[in-house]
Amino acid sequence: MSDTTFAPTYGPVAIPVRELLPWAIFAGLMLLMMIYFVGAEEGAASLIRGTMVHEFVHDGRHLLGFPCH
Image (cartoon, rainbow, N blue to C red; front, top):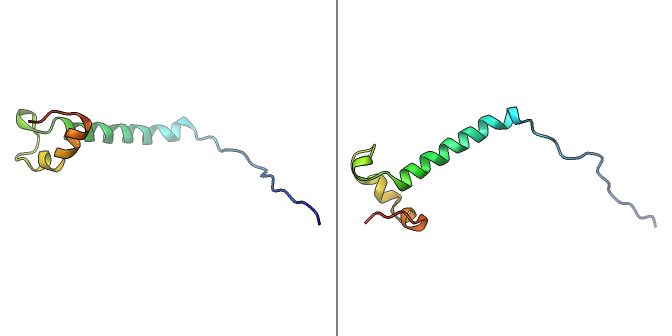
């Protein structure tokens, strides 16, 4: 019986920063938008009329430590 081991002949692929940068900017903008809606979308600073967005993210506000009452 012979012992056979698998040795891969390739290494990790380097991702160029030029390809990664647009995705990083997109993710950062989405994160900032999410933080705005969870943290500041209520009262005088509200961009959307009514309380629908506030009530939708209400529990998330408390979980993240944003005061709202």
